Image (cartoon, rainbow, N blue to C red; front, side, top):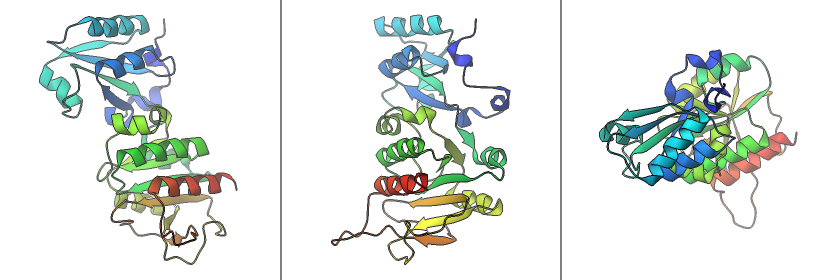
Length: 257
Protein backbone atom coordinates (compact mmCIF):
# COMPACT_ATOMS: atom_id res chain seq x y z
CA UNK A 1 0.00 0.00 0.00
CA UNK A 2 1.27 3.47 -0.85
CA UNK A 3 1.57 5.74 2.17
CA UNK A 4 1.09 9.49 2.24
CA UNK A 5 4.79 9.93 2.82
CA UNK A 6 5.43 8.61 -0.69
CA UNK A 7 3.12 11.06 -2.40
CA UNK A 8 4.27 14.35 -3.86
CA UNK A 9 7.77 13.11 -4.51
CA UNK A 10 9.63 11.36 -7.26
CA UNK A 11 12.94 10.05 -8.37
CA UNK A 12 13.94 13.55 -9.47
CA UNK A 13 13.83 14.64 -5.81
CA UNK A 14 15.55 11.59 -4.39
CA UNK A 15 18.98 13.17 -4.77
CA UNK A 16 18.09 16.40 -2.97
CA UNK A 17 19.51 17.08 0.46
CA UNK A 18 16.97 16.95 3.30
CA UNK A 19 17.01 20.72 3.73
CA UNK A 20 16.00 21.15 0.08
CA UNK A 21 12.93 18.94 0.23
CA UNK A 22 11.67 18.87 3.83
CA UNK A 23 10.38 21.42 6.32
CA UNK A 24 11.02 20.36 9.92
CA UNK A 25 8.35 20.99 12.54
CA UNK A 26 8.41 20.20 16.25
CA UNK A 27 6.11 19.95 19.23
CA UNK A 28 3.48 17.30 19.89
CA UNK A 29 0.40 19.19 18.74
CA UNK A 30 1.91 20.41 15.43
CA UNK A 31 3.29 16.96 14.63
CA UNK A 32 0.00 15.23 15.40
CA UNK A 33 -1.92 17.77 13.31
CA UNK A 34 0.47 17.20 10.40
CA UNK A 35 0.05 13.43 10.60
CA UNK A 36 -3.74 13.82 10.56
CA UNK A 37 -3.76 16.36 7.71
CA UNK A 38 -4.59 14.60 4.41
CA UNK A 39 -3.02 17.48 2.48
CA UNK A 40 0.41 16.98 4.02
CA UNK A 41 2.97 14.25 3.43
CA UNK A 42 5.12 13.45 6.47
CA UNK A 43 8.46 11.90 5.56
CA UNK A 44 9.37 10.76 9.06
CA UNK A 45 8.91 11.39 12.76
CA UNK A 46 11.80 11.42 15.25
CA UNK A 47 11.01 10.82 18.93
CA UNK A 48 13.29 11.31 21.91
CA UNK A 49 14.20 8.17 23.82
CA UNK A 50 12.78 9.56 27.05
CA UNK A 51 9.50 10.85 25.58
CA UNK A 52 6.33 9.34 27.05
CA UNK A 53 2.68 10.18 27.60
CA UNK A 54 -0.76 9.95 26.05
CA UNK A 55 -0.07 12.65 23.45
CA UNK A 56 2.99 10.74 22.27
CA UNK A 57 0.91 7.57 21.98
CA UNK A 58 -1.52 9.46 19.75
CA UNK A 59 1.36 10.52 17.53
CA UNK A 60 2.65 6.95 17.27
CA UNK A 61 -0.81 5.65 16.36
CA UNK A 62 -1.28 8.37 13.73
CA UNK A 63 2.13 7.57 12.24
CA UNK A 64 1.25 3.89 12.10
CA UNK A 65 -2.06 4.62 10.31
CA UNK A 66 -0.33 6.75 7.66
CA UNK A 67 2.66 4.47 7.19
CA UNK A 68 5.06 7.16 8.40
CA UNK A 69 8.36 5.81 9.75
CA UNK A 70 9.24 6.66 13.36
CA UNK A 71 12.82 6.88 14.54
CA UNK A 72 14.15 7.10 18.08
CA UNK A 73 16.98 9.45 19.02
CA UNK A 74 18.59 11.00 22.06
CA UNK A 75 16.90 14.08 23.51
CA UNK A 76 19.87 16.22 22.50
CA UNK A 77 19.59 14.97 18.91
CA UNK A 78 15.89 15.82 18.80
CA UNK A 79 16.62 19.27 20.19
CA UNK A 80 19.29 19.79 17.52
CA UNK A 81 16.88 18.69 14.77
CA UNK A 82 14.39 21.22 16.10
CA UNK A 83 16.94 24.00 15.72
CA UNK A 84 17.89 23.86 19.40
CA UNK A 85 14.38 24.91 20.36
CA UNK A 86 13.33 24.51 23.97
CA UNK A 87 9.81 23.65 22.84
CA UNK A 88 10.37 20.44 20.86
CA UNK A 89 8.52 18.33 23.50
CA UNK A 90 10.60 15.34 22.47
CA UNK A 91 9.32 15.03 18.91
CA UNK A 92 10.08 16.44 15.47
CA UNK A 93 8.77 15.62 11.99
CA UNK A 94 10.00 16.24 8.47
CA UNK A 95 7.23 17.41 6.13
CA UNK A 96 7.60 16.96 2.41
CA UNK A 97 7.65 20.33 0.64
CA UNK A 98 7.02 19.21 -2.96
CA UNK A 99 7.76 22.57 -4.58
CA UNK A 100 10.92 23.33 -2.60
CA UNK A 101 14.13 23.12 -4.61
CA UNK A 102 17.68 24.47 -4.72
CA UNK A 103 18.30 27.44 -7.03
CA UNK A 104 20.48 25.49 -9.46
CA UNK A 105 17.70 22.98 -10.07
CA UNK A 106 15.10 25.73 -10.34
CA UNK A 107 17.04 27.58 -13.02
CA UNK A 108 17.64 24.35 -14.93
CA UNK A 109 14.04 23.20 -14.75
CA UNK A 110 12.53 26.56 -15.76
CA UNK A 111 14.76 26.83 -18.83
CA UNK A 112 13.67 29.72 -21.05
CA UNK A 113 10.04 29.72 -19.95
CA UNK A 114 8.54 32.97 -18.64
CA UNK A 115 9.30 33.02 -14.93
CA UNK A 116 8.51 35.43 -12.11
CA UNK A 117 10.27 35.10 -8.77
CA UNK A 118 10.84 37.03 -5.58
CA UNK A 119 14.27 37.21 -3.97
CA UNK A 120 14.33 38.06 -0.28
CA UNK A 121 17.39 40.17 0.51
CA UNK A 122 17.78 40.48 4.25
CA UNK A 123 14.11 40.09 5.16
CA UNK A 124 14.49 38.92 8.75
CA UNK A 125 10.98 39.03 10.23
CA UNK A 126 9.43 35.53 10.12
CA UNK A 127 5.96 37.05 9.87
CA UNK A 128 6.92 38.93 6.74
CA UNK A 129 8.53 35.85 5.21
CA UNK A 130 5.40 33.79 5.85
CA UNK A 131 3.07 36.40 4.40
CA UNK A 132 5.27 36.76 1.31
CA UNK A 133 5.19 32.98 0.77
CA UNK A 134 1.40 32.99 1.01
CA UNK A 135 1.00 35.97 -1.31
CA UNK A 136 3.44 34.69 -3.93
CA UNK A 137 1.80 31.27 -3.97
CA UNK A 138 -1.65 32.77 -4.29
CA UNK A 139 -0.56 35.08 -7.11
CA UNK A 140 0.96 32.23 -9.09
CA UNK A 141 4.61 33.25 -8.78
CA UNK A 142 7.03 30.55 -9.85
CA UNK A 143 9.41 30.90 -6.93
CA UNK A 144 10.40 32.70 -3.75
CA UNK A 145 14.14 32.60 -3.19
CA UNK A 146 15.10 32.31 0.47
CA UNK A 147 18.85 32.81 0.99
CA UNK A 148 20.10 30.74 3.91
CA UNK A 149 22.20 33.71 4.99
CA UNK A 150 19.99 36.50 6.28
CA UNK A 151 16.56 34.85 6.01
CA UNK A 152 14.75 33.04 8.85
CA UNK A 153 14.45 29.27 8.73
CA UNK A 154 11.00 28.10 7.64
CA UNK A 155 9.90 27.27 11.15
CA UNK A 156 6.77 27.69 13.28
CA UNK A 157 6.53 31.49 12.99
CA UNK A 158 6.94 31.47 9.21
CA UNK A 159 4.48 28.59 8.84
CA UNK A 160 1.92 30.33 11.06
CA UNK A 161 2.20 33.61 9.15
CA UNK A 162 1.73 31.74 5.87
CA UNK A 163 -1.39 30.07 7.32
CA UNK A 164 0.14 26.70 6.46
CA UNK A 165 0.84 27.54 2.82
CA UNK A 166 4.60 27.33 3.40
CA UNK A 167 4.46 23.55 2.89
CA UNK A 168 3.08 24.04 -0.65
CA UNK A 169 4.95 27.24 -1.53
CA UNK A 170 7.50 27.36 -4.38
CA UNK A 171 10.47 27.87 -2.06
CA UNK A 172 13.85 28.16 -3.77
CA UNK A 173 16.91 27.78 -1.58
CA UNK A 174 20.15 29.69 -2.21
CA UNK A 175 23.26 30.30 -0.10
CA UNK A 176 23.16 34.12 -0.28
CA UNK A 177 21.21 36.84 -2.05
CA UNK A 178 24.30 37.85 -4.02
CA UNK A 179 24.94 34.30 -5.19
CA UNK A 180 21.32 34.08 -6.31
CA UNK A 181 21.54 37.33 -8.29
CA UNK A 182 24.77 36.22 -9.95
CA UNK A 183 23.32 32.88 -11.03
CA UNK A 184 20.01 34.32 -12.22
CA UNK A 185 21.61 37.16 -14.14
CA UNK A 186 23.98 34.69 -15.83
CA UNK A 187 20.92 32.65 -16.83
CA UNK A 188 19.33 35.67 -18.50
CA UNK A 189 16.97 36.96 -15.83
CA UNK A 190 16.43 40.68 -15.35
CA UNK A 191 16.82 41.83 -11.75
CA UNK A 192 14.34 44.43 -10.52
CA UNK A 193 14.51 46.28 -7.24
CA UNK A 194 11.92 48.38 -5.47
CA UNK A 195 13.03 51.90 -4.61
CA UNK A 196 11.28 55.09 -3.58
CA UNK A 197 14.04 56.97 -5.42
CA UNK A 198 13.22 55.47 -8.83
CA UNK A 199 11.30 57.46 -11.43
CA UNK A 200 9.97 54.32 -13.15
CA UNK A 201 6.56 53.25 -11.88
CA UNK A 202 5.95 49.54 -11.40
CA UNK A 203 2.54 50.02 -13.01
CA UNK A 204 3.95 51.48 -16.23
CA UNK A 205 7.16 49.49 -16.58
CA UNK A 206 7.68 46.94 -19.32
CA UNK A 207 8.75 43.75 -17.56
CA UNK A 208 10.90 41.02 -19.02
CA UNK A 209 9.39 37.52 -19.36
CA UNK A 210 11.96 36.20 -16.89
CA UNK A 211 12.04 38.60 -13.96
CA UNK A 212 13.39 38.64 -10.43
CA UNK A 213 11.89 41.10 -7.95
CA UNK A 214 14.22 41.81 -5.04
CA UNK A 215 12.55 42.54 -1.70
CA UNK A 216 14.93 44.40 0.58
CA UNK A 217 15.21 43.92 4.32
CA UNK A 218 13.15 45.78 6.86
CA UNK A 219 16.16 47.77 8.10
CA UNK A 220 18.83 47.99 5.43
CA UNK A 221 16.87 47.61 2.21
CA UNK A 222 18.41 46.06 -0.89
CA UNK A 223 22.06 45.06 -0.72
CA UNK A 224 22.48 43.33 -4.12
CA UNK A 225 23.00 44.93 -7.52
CA UNK A 226 19.89 45.33 -9.66
CA UNK A 227 19.38 45.97 -13.37
CA UNK A 228 16.48 48.35 -12.87
CA UNK A 229 14.65 49.86 -9.92
CA UNK A 230 10.90 50.33 -9.85
CA UNK A 231 8.71 52.65 -7.82
CA UNK A 232 5.40 51.90 -6.13
CA UNK A 233 3.78 55.36 -6.21
CA UNK A 234 2.60 56.50 -2.77
CA UNK A 235 0.62 59.56 -1.74
CA UNK A 236 -0.34 61.73 1.24
CA UNK A 237 3.06 61.64 2.85
CA UNK A 238 3.40 57.84 2.98
CA UNK A 239 7.06 57.11 2.31
CA UNK A 240 7.20 53.32 2.27
CA UNK A 241 5.24 50.09 2.65
CA UNK A 242 5.86 47.05 4.79
CA UNK A 243 7.88 44.57 2.71
CA UNK A 244 5.09 41.97 2.73
CA UNK A 245 2.58 44.59 1.57
CA UNK A 246 4.96 45.71 -1.18
CA UNK A 247 5.33 42.08 -2.26
CA UNK A 248 1.55 41.77 -2.54
CA UNK A 249 1.37 44.89 -4.72
CA UNK A 250 4.08 43.54 -7.04
CA UNK A 251 2.69 39.99 -7.12
CA UNK A 252 -0.80 40.92 -8.20
CA UNK A 253 0.32 43.65 -10.58
CA UNK A 254 2.45 41.04 -12.34
CA UNK A 255 -0.33 38.43 -12.19
CA UNK A 256 -2.79 40.89 -13.72
CA UNK A 257 -0.69 41.38 -16.85
